[in-house]
Length: 155
Image (cartoon, rainbow, N blue to C red; front, side):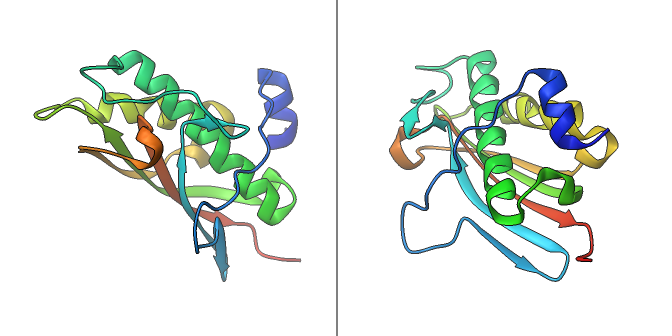
């Protein structure tokens, strides 16, 4: 089953690809690798999850925010390549969690993203990962994700 068909089966509709918020590119392909810039918890330009975990968000709501970030990553992949069916596998995922001082559960938050990638892509969604708690993110986003994806060779 194609990834595009899998999204339909799961009832997942991707948002419009988020525009770059500065002087950078949302994605750059080099060879068969696609490097994806950080994306926030926003859908169609509106923030969905803001504030730090441990004060404004729980681990569960922040994990939902991480899932929103995945939708934005996928939208950027589709915008750059034309189809999610070009993805061979996810290589690396870096997750930043806006959290209160001493927060130690950032891996549980980023599991929201990792679990969704595996749900959509199966084993090709498994990846290496870092999950880092920070004291602030752009637009007060609860989560920011960036990724590296291996693409299928160009025909």
